[in-house]
Length: 320
Image (cartoon, rainbow, N blue to C red; front, top):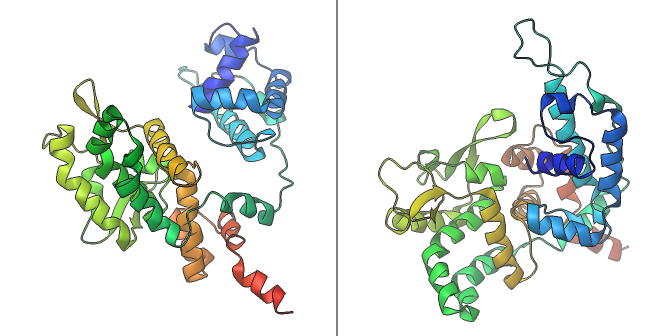
């Protein structure tokens, strides 16, 4: 949704369309779509920071948006226009759009090697003892520099925040998967959680033992702290206007950024997922097991983790 919002805001801001109706979308050609692609490629670091603050885009670097982020935007638009050009609410079966202009818009070739990507990512991972050190920082140290008001919010939410951070670090779940967990999905005795993966597939995901205590502690205070009734099935709650609500992905992103910035380096929930993947691969040396844990349909994406924390390679080279 973030990708679509930014796209339509750009279209309207450039006076290409005046609204987001189907009639307006029919006016969009490959020319305008490639203009948007160029816009994504040339966005300055300053503009990226502004949009990160406003729309919560997380992946940026000193040159602007990364190739991966640009390609995610393009892929999202390909999905949208494919749907509009193949689906219909017309009795005659005529699709919303007669043609698919995104067929003439290509993604950008990523010329960064896996080793280079891994090197950049490793700086934002909490590996080895840093995993527990990060959780200990949240529990014991973060509060020391807070104002009285900030401390009151921290004390209300610390068990929940620890549970979320520990869950991602102990399972590698995606942010959307964490957001949508319900109470009945979690099995404390089996160290498992049922989640909905990409493609709307249900999956049973194992959780590392170190995370279970944090989850149990949160469940003990969940009802009283967040006014959750017996019928409330949402796992991770917040208080909004006096009522319990499901915690949003944006709220979790902000929470992780807040704690991680104070600990070492500001990261996103996705970097916590990378942390689990790297640690699991290092422990098992198995791309298949790591891919299964992450919910990847193949090991191609998972290959990245073979290049992170390559101390063994360095030792071997030094021994030559």
